[in-house]
Amino acid sequence: MAGEWVDRGRDVTSGLTPMPSGSEELLTVGHVLEGYTYEDIIDDPKYFKDLFLKHKLLCFRELNLTGDQNPEVVRAMGYHVFGHHKEDHRNTIAVEYRVNDPSELLVPWHVENLHQQYPPEVAGWNMELFTCSKRHGRTGFVNLAECTSRLPIETVDRLRDFEFIVARQAEDGEEAKKQVESGSREVCIRNKRALGPDGRLMHGDDSDHYYAHVRKAIETHPLTNEPVFRYECDWIYLDNFIKGPEAGDNWLESQSGQSSTGTCFTYSSESERLEVDRLAQGIYLNPDNQFWWEWTQGDFLLADLFVMAHSVTGGFQSDERRLDVTFNTVEVHDRPVSGEKGNWVAAGFADEEERKRIRKGMLSS
Ligand SMILES: [Fe+2]
Image (cartoon, rainbow, N blue to C red; front, side, top):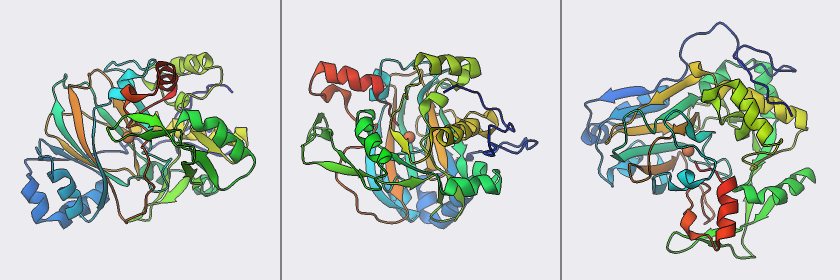
């Protein structure tokens, strides 16, 4: 499998054209709001909700929310809060091959938690601690609704039928792959990890399983009805984008065709999958599609995660940059009680060998 770089406007292979050429406007732009307060939002949530549905990313500079105000803001805007946690990227920083540098991606481009049947549709990100250098630890965004709107309609129609599942972790790959290859539509995987009462990871119970939901590469936005290309592109196509195509190829070669994520499995042929991975690569890695936020402490970002793929650059330690995170959805959904990919506590693995193995393969969102 060759690591071909895909430029904007370049027809990859058989019809999955990444972008029509000739459109130079910046696609993804966060809407920046300065001088606002928590009370402003609570007093007129509809105003901000309308703005949010239009822009998909609201960037409140130094809103300085307190701990409880993040869920209050998203609730006021009509969303259901199903998760509230801290993210300091300690597990990602601990992954051996990650380069923690401001010019590198610490967290590769991704759509949030596609291993879940009901992934978060909105994130409230309150930067409650930020003491690293200003240009470090930036968050990048790509608006997949806008990018999808620029795809040829026949490409979108093909993607509507493109099916895949996402396993929770790389070590579930073999189990998932076998089932997908057998054509199973109900992929049931033994839960090898579980979060213990103290937040540490423990062995999952033998009888504990989870279902990997069959997804399609085009999903419809729950509020705006926009078609959105939401797919877990293999990170081998996304990892080293700052270094450009050559480094991307080198990385691919160094992996000997192995997947660095190993969590996405498709019901299509290898060649079809390759086309879709490259289409996603062409979208994510086009700088014209990207918007980068440079954080200051107290900033609050409201991100429509249904459309906003995102990434994080490095250059910080976990005690220098801490987000208070709410995950939210439009509707209330039943959720299995299980650990989330990407929020695991690396210190809690059962033994050092396992810990090493997981660290090599694990990437965090
Ligand atoms: Fe994420």
